[in-house]
Image (tube, rainbow, N blue to C red; front, top):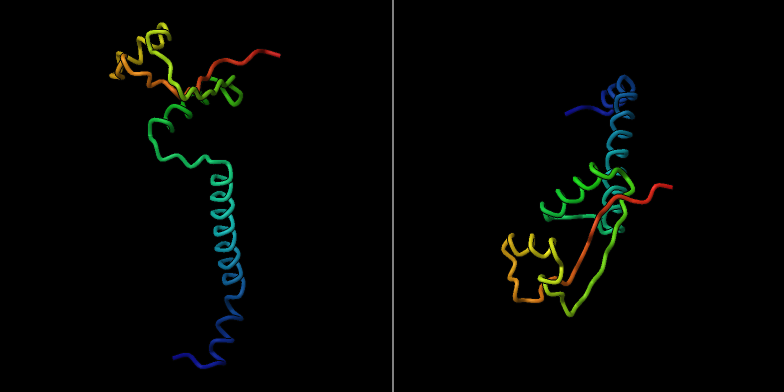
Length: 113
C-alpha cells in the first residue's frame, strides 16, 4: 500500500502522462457519444447487410450526390407493370402474383449543373 507522500511523488513525476490519459479517454468517450448521437438522430444505424452494401456501393458509384427517388405505395404495385425491373425482381424469387412492391428507393445519376 502506498503512502500519501509516495502517491503525491508519483503523481508529480507522471502528471503529464496522467493528464494525457484523461484527455484521451475523454476525447474517445466524447467521439463515441457524438457518433452515436449523429447516427441515431439521422436514422443511419443499419443492421441489414444488404442495405449497407447497397448504400455504400451507390456512394462509390455515384459519389456523394446521387439523385434519389423514394416512394411508398401501400396498395402495392404489380411487378408485371414494372417492366425490366419487375422481371428482375421476379427472377430474384419475389412472388409475381402478389402486389408486394410497396416501398421504393431508387438511386441514379443526378443532373449536371
